[in-house]
Image 1: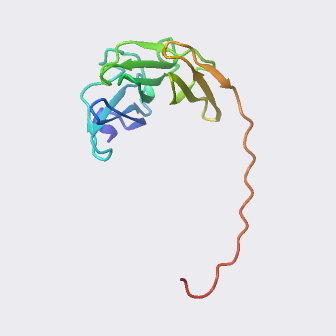
Image 2: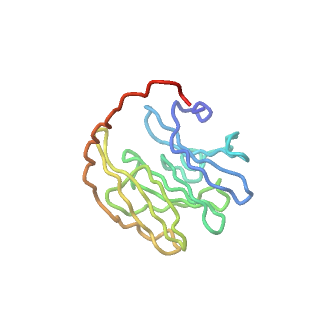
Length: 188
């Protein structure tokens, strides 16, 4: 429960396989209280029973103490774990999307700001192989937003993500499906 990390709400459950063959889920606290936000983790051997890992991955009390929310994690080819996350615009600058990598998936000691416009939130990252990544993220407010896509090629995480598409037209409303009367008689 969210109360296990002292919050009323948690968000961003992102699961990766560890070097040891276990599973680790990364998530952040959320809610109506002011910032900062933190990233936590839990471990599992069967993807059903989870144990909260001790400590904070990113945020107050961690080596990387800046605010972090909505994490998305990937396992790299060398077994390290990279987390993409959002530093809220009301945090101390710089703000926007960040990337941090950890050899053991527990201690993240350095981060890199991802230089994209707009700044972005809620990253979801997929490895395309060969060091290339596709990142989807959104930017907006309570009245609407846009989902963006960015791609990184090469093996180094320090490379800049470049937006692949900056906006999409809204979808047209779907017409209702025609209805037919239900058959009468025994069901087979």
